[in-house]
Amino acid sequence: MRKLRYTYCMLLLGLVMKFPAQLPAEQNNKAGFRKSAYGGFIMHTQGLGLNLYFSKFKTADTKKLFAFDIVSMKHPKEVKSFGVIDENAKGFVYGKLNSLYVLRLGLGRKRILYEKLREQAVEISYFWIAGASIGMAKPVYLEVFNIVGELIQVERYDPEKHNLTNIFGRGPAARGISEIKFYPGVCLKLGVTFEYSGYRSGIKAIEVGGVFDAYPQRIPIMTNTKNNFLYPSLYINLLFGKKYF
Image (tube, rainbow, N blue to C red; front, side, top):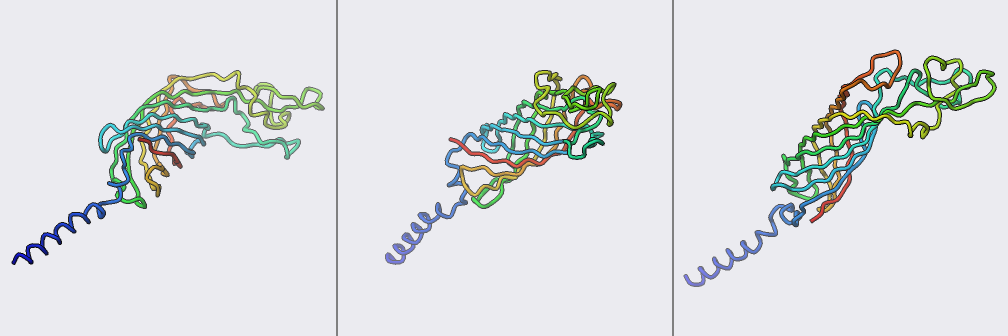
């Protein structure tokens, strides 16, 4: 009987000592990470862009988010054209007054729906962000023929004097930066994140969602058409980053 009790105790002790090694990998991998910084490349229904996130745990499954986006925003009526005189010239959008870029600064919350229990698994989270949306309208410059028609010069697009017969092509991209006009507004961003990094301190994720930008006045992108003050869009975001203690 005494030998049987000894064997039982040793077996129980062995199981207790072995148990921690069989816990889900995530319990060993969290290692107290409290903050993270990550960002990436955005492709959305009206353009492209870049973004950056900073997050901090508030509870075990809730994070506070700080977000920064910079994206281009196209008008639905934009169509690329080429000069009739030289098809090798740079393409341009006929009738486009300004190129619109949007800077978003926001705060929000992120909640973990399905926690990553193993390094090779996927963590699923959803989030919301609200904040400022600053529209930046940069005037469009074109290469045009002068009155004589022999010399090409760069001019700000003027629908009263420029047409398909005297436009040669698109002007320098940096031209007009000093003339940017700002349009303050608001934004709301909702999305779902799928994080799949195989390293406990790394972040690799795909994010999908929608953004709604709103401004108190219409932003003049195109001439001879109705411009918008509401800009809804859907997006996919490829993210990379790191977690910190």
